Length: 108
Length: 123
Image (tube, rainbow over all chains, first blue to last red; front, side, top):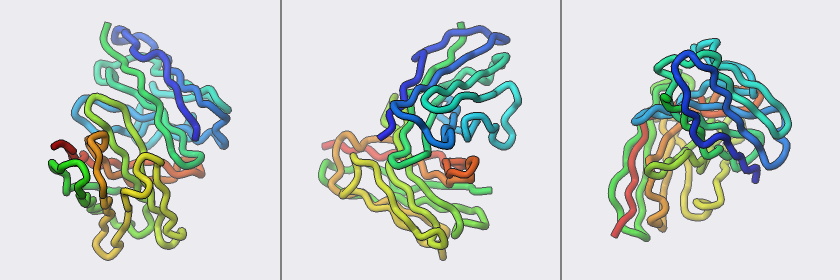
């Protein structure tokens, strides 16, 4: 089983600032099969990034993903008010398709 | 595009059973790989089961905490996926999301999500 850790647990930033979220896997994730999801309170998660760096349909270009092997990053270039949420990474290279514990981005 | 609506959640005693349903109003359900993901109150996301399309072999996979107790199935004639949950435990209390997977750069990941159905296991 591939375990995912995310850091930091909470990121306190102001609108307009850059957010950098980290996801680390316990073993190499083949083909960079890592996805990122955004979840707002009371809502279902929304797919942002797949394949480590490809934006899902309709996702603004201020969201970007990078990484390979065991280290992956989600970057939000300039935080908009609607971006304050919890972000999860997931690996889908092999069952069980584990999620990280999440990073909460809140308003400073 | 898939539009997913879950039902069947509720309050059940430990050791009891529930069957969750998810209907997909999308036009290509029979080709979709479907998954269930749950979220305990105030906690993170946990993948629990997946069923591939019949055309792709219908392979089923489970996470260890539910294997042997939960059963995922599908009825393509009704555009539905089910999660039969037996021998429920208090730790199964969660919001259960139905997801429809999409092609994620060669692999498959949850692209569409329902709003979830709440399962509470309590005596």
